Length: 373
Image 1 (cartoon, rainbow, N blue to C red):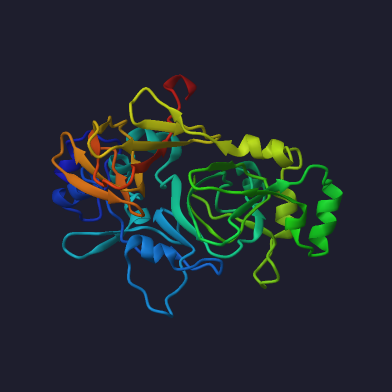
Image 2 (spheres, rainbow, N blue to C red; image 1 turned 90 degrees about the vertical axis):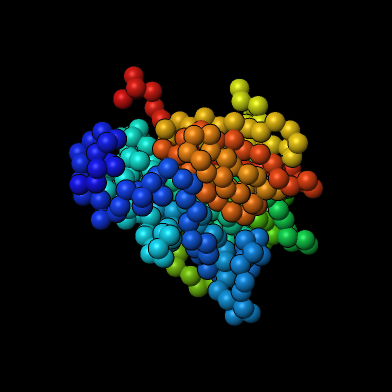
């Protein structure tokens, strides 16, 4: 048994994959930069994410529709590169209860289990996605799915010049359930029945489960969800991909608002917190989404560790992230991400880019109060 772990008084000691104390320190007391290039090559993607990350690519390179930045999902799991050149699949490391508690936090493991509970991505919508929806957790269980249901938070970063850059969200006012189902059966273009929103950089959309939606070509965004890949396609522009019509009918929320009323409900706004330089946006699930903003010459933002993991995603400029008690300093550029383990301690965020605002997203979990257990 690893003496380093025993000294932390964690519950139910178990063997630790033959990791040394130094290797455990590397993954639990310092920011983790996952191996880059964890791309999903869906047909609606492009090559902007390669450029954003400074990754070289050839003319025949696979498309990069999504970059799964911090993922414990079996489809595109994140990987960690060790100093000696070995790689570990992140989700495999979390199978050990002690290591999961050190990385995620005791409370996260207690309430949400050892699987990494979130999935965060950079997304390049180069062409239209399908018209689709995501089931609720209850519906996903009823349908026998392995993945849970999910809601999504989308934060628009940039737009492709000359593209439509729209979000179709829910149904237009006055479109009936019967008209929708007939259009689906006839394989008609569902965008004709959907409420259209032209999006702009900086806008936030919280898309509930059961709500039909489609991003059209032209948007670069951050997507934040529970760890799930459940998507039910209802219309796909004759691209011959598998459809999920019956599951979609079982999952759609026919009681949700429509048109502009639904749009207003789904729009998110940054709200200031008690910490200067930290804003938050309300979510309807267990995700906690905040934004750090720091100027080049202004006071740095001080972040107090909550004893839970955090994912930091660079969205504007560049920041220096400096530990207050563990002796580490890392840089976070636009398009890059870091996992801050639960035991990494407090840190300062300082801006580095003179020409831009310096901003990062901070994503973690809402831990229920002890009384709610």
